[in-house]
Image (tube, rainbow, N blue to C red; front, side, top):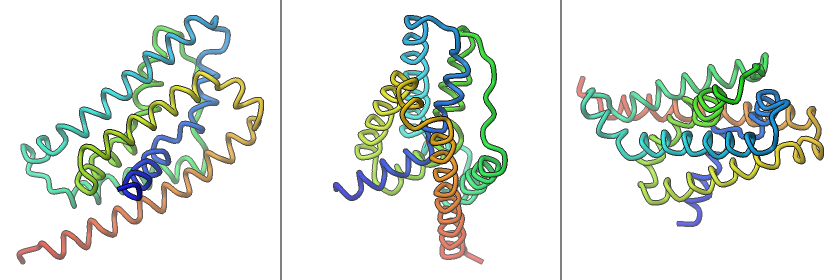
Length: 195
């Protein structure tokens, strides 16, 4: 059970790439006083967590309604994850200027809870079950909240170059996870095929 939690946590941590989000968050909140900045972090993490939890809890129902099998999503989600990881490796995530009023939408979704995290969460529910996924999701969002609240300190300690390096390593790990998702999805599709 501990192994399952750790596997789930690490998969989500890599997909979320909160360390890679830090420089963008700092750019978005540059010049904001501490109180609105804290409010923005709280709201962004809550929005991101609610979206991820909804996909974890009702994702299977959506699949059933649309006639999508889990292996279809593994292949599709793996391709999306792979493209995101390759783009991240090639050019990095671009920091954009955002005001405090619009910061929640790009920060909460899609920067914290993006397609990669959604795909990871939905696939993990099928592997580990709701309880483990929700607990590791909660742990990841607590970590994300703490990292964003202490972002200035973290960036000062490891530097902008350090956050870039960590982001690139996370992108490399994401490509490996993406290939694993695509491979297992294809093998499952072949195994369950009735042709």
